[in-house]
Length: 122
Image (cartoon, rainbow, N blue to C red):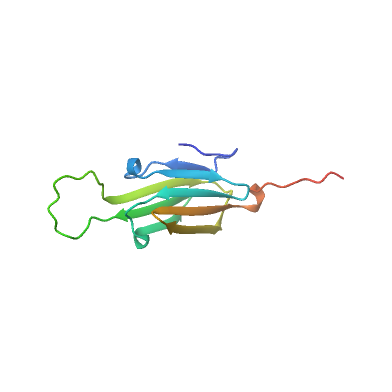
């Protein structure tokens, strides 16, 4: 997956359990919105950080603690890591995140120099 403007603003990089974690990146005039499906994950088990030029989202989908006898299961548990290469066009102080109904939404504000600007003709 590759999402870009001229200088490749966001680039999704494969992490652990990628096949079970679906995401979507939407570009608006002033920001990017990253949506990640994390059904079954608790808010306290999600970490969002920057590491150099990477936005890193880590989540831990834990197995239930009850000792039931499971006959069959196709559910996956464990660590989920999503990495997105972000360019200098992201304002790192303008990041907002919310987690609602199993979907993590991260809003990444574009830096002023990368936002659309209307030029007046005189």
